Length: 141
Image 1 (cartoon, helix red, strand yellow):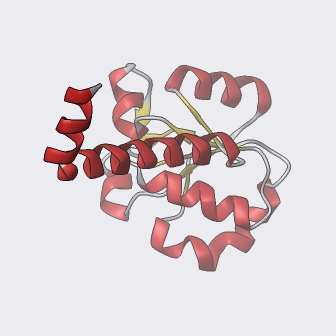
Image 2 (cartoon, helix red, strand yellow):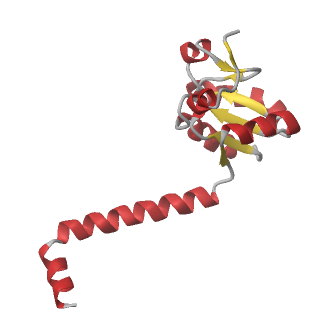
Image 3 (cartoon, helix red, strand yellow):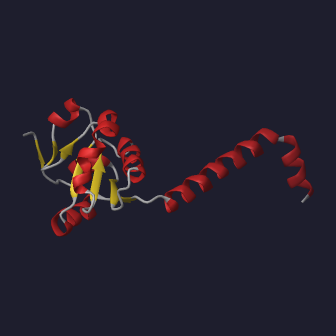
């Protein structure tokens, strides 16, 4: 115990960093469990698309979308989402799977959809990159 207290008093910066990182991890975990949207993988997404008629929402920029996207995806770039969210209201009763290139930007889209009153929202974990890694089809049309 004496060595532990000595270590703590000799290395306050390490302990501050430790508790800071621990706090961020706990906060992130609590946030993930309390948000209305869930993260799903490509295989879970295909099940939702095939069995529950899920809407796929591509929030990437136009150039990324033209390079290849999930078949029948609705394209609304993340920057345009607030102004075009009313047009998405027609899909409100269906599951919505949002995706971007890596799954980061689509998390922001899911939060915006949640605030707009959508209920069945999913974020494609790993985004389009994960979709392609699973050898699932993309189209350029």
